[in-house]
Each structure stands twice: as C-alpha cells, then as structure tokens.
Length: 286
Image (spheres, rainbow, N blue to C red):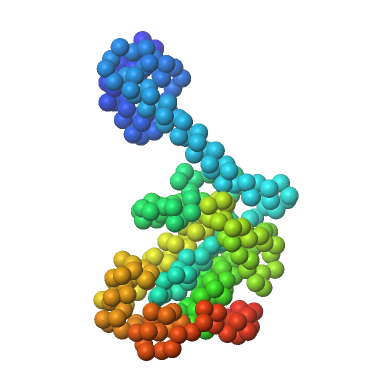
C-alpha cells in the first residue's frame, strides 16, 4: 500500500483534524483522491482543503502587498527600515506610547495588520511577542501625562515616536511613519496616510505600541484602584466618564483634556496648547 493509500485509509475526522484544524501540509494527490472518494464527507473535506489553500494564497498576497513600501526602499539600497506608530492619543488618562520596529527583509507574519483591526486582545499579544522575537530591533517610547499637558497630545505623540526611534539598538536607514513626520529626526523618513494598514513595519509598530500601552494601563489599575483602567485603558467610555465624575481625577488623568478639566472645575483650553513651547520642548528632547 502506498503512503497516499495509507493516508486515505484514515477516517474523515482524522484527515480533517490534520489538514484543516491543524493546517498541516497536504501531500500531492490527496484532494483529488478525496474528490473521487465514495465516503460520506470526503467531498466536503476536499472543498475545505481547497478553501484553506485559497485563503492561504489570499493571505500571502495581502502580506506581500503590505511590504510594498519596504520593498521599494530595499530596492533603493535602504537596508534597515523602521516602522513607527503610536497608541493612546484619545484616552483621558495615561501616557501616549509609540513603537519603532525594524523587520527582517521580506518578513511575513500571518494575521499581521493594523492593531485597530485586531479586536482579540489575545491575538494582539501573541503577534506582539512574535514580532519582538523576530524583529531586527524594536523599541517602545512614551510621553508622560505631564508632557501631554505641557506640549499637547499631538506634539507629545511625536515626542514618543522620536524616543522610540532613538531607542532602537540598530539605527534605521529609513523611517516609515503613520500619517506624520517626526520632527528633529535626522534619518530620512516618509509619512504614509493610513500607514498602519499599508505597511508591514508600521502595522508591527502599531501592535507593539498598543499592547505596551494596554499593559501599562493594567499596571495603573492596581496603583489607582476604582477607575477600572485595566478594562477601558483610559479611553472616554461611558463607564470611565462616570467613574471620573464620581471619584474625581487621578494623578494619571490628562489635565488638558476637556472631561478632566470639567471635573476639576478648570476652564476649557484650546486643542493646540502653546505651540511655541511645544516646538521648543520637542526640540530639546523633553
């Protein structure tokens, strides 16, 4: 009996567990044999395997497209390309966190995507760990609440990005940034609108930034009990706004944000706080 015949002698549930559930490689001739098999469920299993192959091809093409900016730069002679993104611009509490990630050439990681598209926290954490393991270099930088209130959130986000780039153990040859340009960065860079959905490097950075900040907010939950920071991560959810009004502002609440100022009885402020001071502080590396 040939190895193919031995394989096909197994039950349909066994074959399904191997080739669909565990996604093991399918030997040549298996699908065709299943399509000619008289056993009940064999045709359905063949369709499932073909669908798995189709999805794998589509995912492979998606991941290849996600590298188009990196491939263009590699072809131009840039070797170490860092993707940069931030997390935590909208929350009422906690720091803003940025990440810079340099991926290996032609890096393809199943399910890699903009962190906002990955709703399952466990999947984000799994991807973050894999990226950290595989990356040529990665670094997370942050801007603290006091810096957010002094500079404003926009400039604080840029400062966190700059710190992430400067913290890389391997200096990048080029930097790809989600939607912006990092001031006072001597490395050539390009801002890409919706870059976290278009660039693998930026998508990887978005995942590192998001998971790093989420972990920080979980730590703050025990330092400042009662606000449920581990649940809402500082975002202005109805629950968070209710607790803010009931308990008052914690030290990690952003005093420059309107809901926090309202609770503290402070006057509203402009969205852009002291741009001259912000530019000077960012330039000084604060």
